Length: 361
Length: 261
Ligand SMILES: Nc1ncnc2c1ncn2[C@@H]1O[C@H](COP(=O)(O)OP(=O)(O)OP(=O)(O)O)[C@@H](O)[C@H]1O
Ligand SMILES: [Mg+2]
Image (cartoon, rainbow over all chains, first blue to last red; front, side, top):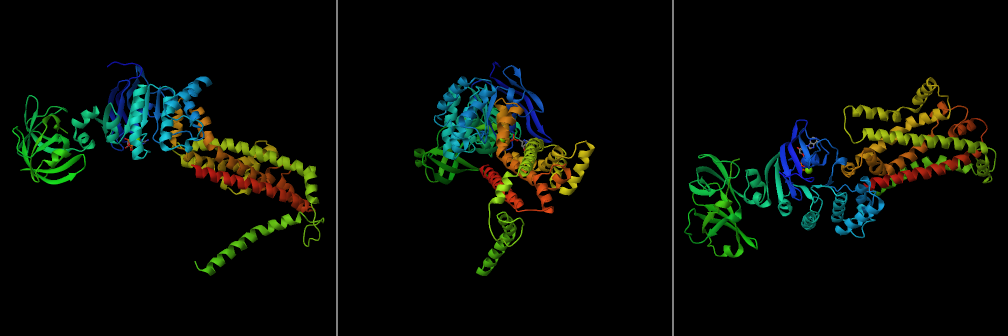
């Protein structure tokens, strides 16, 4: 673990509000220059964690480090991190330039320095010509950019963003997601971003921390989380997934062999060691199920019936009933052309063992 | 609504308006009467009472005295009221409700009772009846209005504004001066005009707490009892004009900033 002055460490953080536990035993280390997202459902403690980082909330237990400095008790005005608020919190009586200047004035910079920095940021944020407007004379997207410019102005080590895209409409949101990611890459700053939107998290992040009920569920890259969820919560929260109730038959060299109502499946277990005979869940994405009209030669194929077929343009979604399996409809997606070659009823399916996640909880 | 009820409603409304304004109209009319005595009939008209009023050094002195009291009261009330609003505003603490009720009490205590108690209090503090005693009395009466208006405005300020100021490096004092205070200003202007008007207009407190020098309402009242001339009406008409203009602009200011938030 290499620390430099813009690494972030939350060490065994807990926060209780009276009897409500908002964050529990949260322990992470963030390397500089990463786009890290806190993802989780409403009320899971994302904002609380972020506000602990920003200095607005003191944790009940644990320590916060910025670089090598312990900042647990340092108030927000003396921390070298800045925050973009969900409602942007632009000062309504100040112009765009005055808003951006605020943090610079607090740092004691002189007029010329401040002006230079404002011009630089206005250009960088494509806000040229808007410097003299008041916040209520701007569109939602422009306000969002001003909030970002204001937070970036004092050149913080880490930028915290609490659902900053929540107030934008769906189309603008998609565009701003890309912009934000670009800005992060150009500035090379650490961004800690909060959202409850899994798609947004997958689009933007280098690393996602999934939270649930105040705890860290899983920590990994978007691909890791998508293809190799470690808990049923993560598998269910991110993307669409098929959840299969199985029991462990035996542990192979490479795979865990599962029994699924008489069918033999293979999968990977990353969240611990599975024991023989244990009941587990297995998760697999719809696109990791392959279908073919003729019985392929390899092992582990199952016969299934197509009970529903929805054409969605670039892909076709199939609902499958596997022979001999009760109470479970599998969802599979196939690229358009492939689906056309299938018959109307019978298909042979196989589940890719590398993308079948064995979940212990 | 049928046509008849609508007619009835509008008649009642106009009757109310006439009842409200007739005394005022009569008062203003008397100011233009060319005679030493107030009362009908008015045979000839004149502007002379306005000239007399404007050139009456005694009245001008009293007007200045009342204005001094009103302005001092306003400044004090705004400072204390804003401070109380900050203390009672967004933060939560135990016993807040009791403190809030105590802070509002002076506004609802009957004027005569607070006037007497203030008189006794001032005496026990060795404050002689006069300007400072009146300012003290008016301030006690006005602070709750400023506090209430201030709290209402503070509650409509998003918490994130202060958080953002702190986040950008401001301490609590700078955050208050540069973010909260400008946010409060429109409400404080409205509350300030209200304070000026109530102080200028107040009779009971000024009467009980005053010394030999009367405020304008007290002076007008004393003139009523001794021989009174239409000069009083001219003075009253001028005051009516000024206060109405001030009051209406205060009301507009308060309404506008409510719409903006
Ligand atoms: N000041 C507070 N006092 C009491 N409880 C609080 C306070 N702030 C947060 N909580 C509780 O802590 C938990 C976590 O809150 P937090 O705001 O961190 O959630 P969140 O993940 O940001 O949710 P959302 O997506 O809705 O913003 C919630 O159960 C919330 O009710
Ligand atoms: Mg939140």
